[in-house]
Length: 296
Image (cartoon, rainbow, N blue to C red; front, side, top):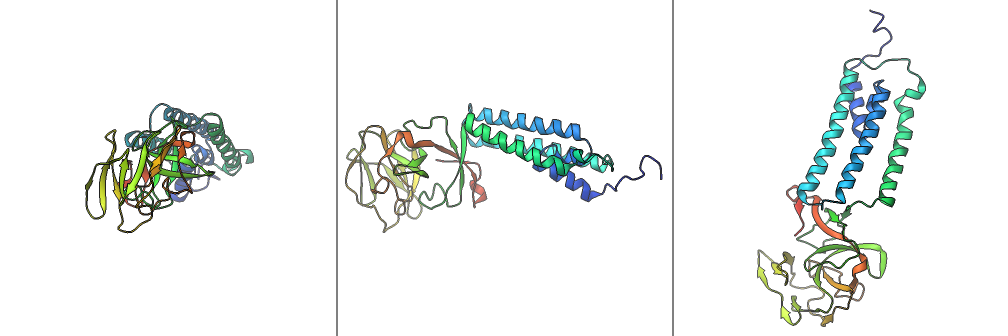
């Protein structure tokens, strides 16, 4: 055996995959494991800069399905490229024994995680992204949103008055620690009422057309159309006439028979200042065909 390979641990597929996995989770960590610690630190800093650029982009571009797909693809391709390079270096035999302890991947992982967490907190606290992720915990907006859907909301206009038909995420009017997501159907000055589950706006029935089963396609005055679910028996089928006060809006769930919303005193009118963002894209769902679909 030559002097160049003496004492060098075997670079098998297990080490190759381990290096790739390390750099997939924390870009650059697999390179440190492979002995290329300077390059590993460079990749780690490049990853922070790259992700900072993606977050900066959310301040300009709304979270449409195309934009979201491009961000996910860009992030995935970058991490895969870094991971593949780390695996290649181990496979080619660049990993060596006898390195100083302070160049070990096990030592590097702690400060790298700490820096990553500090960077993420700084981004959230001082540079608000234009997108935010939310989880749908209930069926109150079926069929538009299913339980366990994850949506990306546009937060560019947080705290401002939404428009008819917007599916908005807002802080609960009576408990700001709780986030709700509902459909805007009434704006300041509007008279809102439900009669036999039919939505009336300013004394006129909102146009709707029947779809399959108990579903209907409802269209608001601005032309925004969406699908609702109307069950034969459900709470809130008949209500008083509500007059939406200035600075607030009236919100309903699309699952009209199973939604706690502005019809009930527990929620009531929603101040525009409570708006967090408008749901734009479903980025994860129990139904794969809904992934990266636009929220109607």
